[in-house]
Length: 146
Image 1: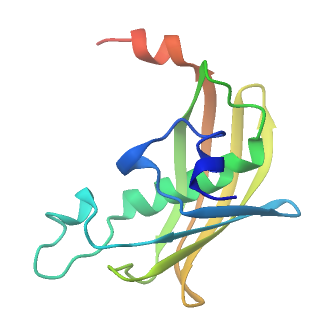
Image 2: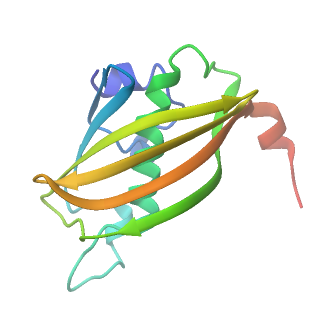
């Protein structure tokens, strides 16, 4: 699945769509994102030695996992992170790297989905994590103010 096809599933656009391609392989999602070096999150992290922030790597994992829910995320819905657990960073991801993901949905309860995944560069483990997210009404998220 290419970026255009991914946008048919995910609501992310422009600088926050962090997948170049993804495919479903059995019960897993295998995604790829090549770090160009011009991304907004590299501008200050760190100017002399750019490294992809861990939170962005977690976002790429979640976006990869969401393709396993094709048909669940409609135009009136948003997938929103509910939690991260057991996140381990093993190796940095830098400009020029192709970050590859392997993610699984381990269970679901109503609108909540629980998953786990790993991210690699050239076969080397960079991150592993367990995570959860909720498929919620876009109107609910957009109307909430503190």
